[in-house]
Length: 61
Image (cartoon, rainbow, N blue to C red):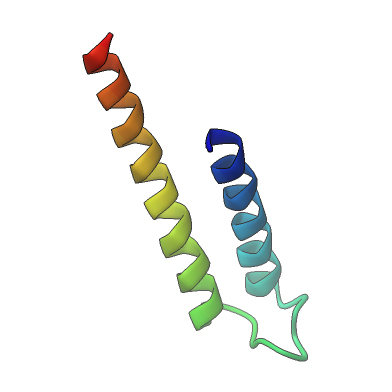
């Protein structure tokens, strides 16, 4: 599960970066588009989830 979340996070950051730089121009406008904010939000949720999960594992040990 952790590896899957890491790979998903990396893909989301890559899409977010490409969208921000305008390399996905024909389909998505460059800059702070809804795609950028969506990827940023999901990436943030993954980071928060993993942090909570690690904290929970530390409590159990």
